[in-house]
Amino acid sequence: MMSKSKVDTRDLYTTKDIAAVRALLTKEQNGLSKLTGLPLDSAVLDHKHDIAQFVRAVINSKENVALGAIEN
Image 1: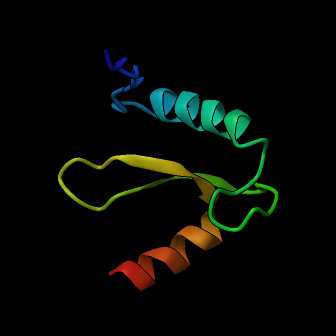
Image 2: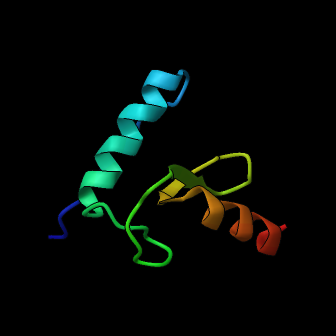
C-alpha cells in the first residue's frame, strides 16, 4: 500500500501571509537561496507565473529579477 504524502498548502492573500511563508521556507532552506546556494540577503518568494502561482522557493530579489527575464 502506498502512503500519501501530505502537502502543506497556504493561501497568500495578505503581506502577513507572504511573510509567514517566506520565513518558513527561509528556515527550511537554512537561510540559503534555492537557486544559487548563496546566503539570503533580500529574500523573496519565487513562484511560477501561471494561473496557479505555485511558490517554488525563496531566492534573493536580484536572482528573481534575472530569473524572470530568462523565463519571460
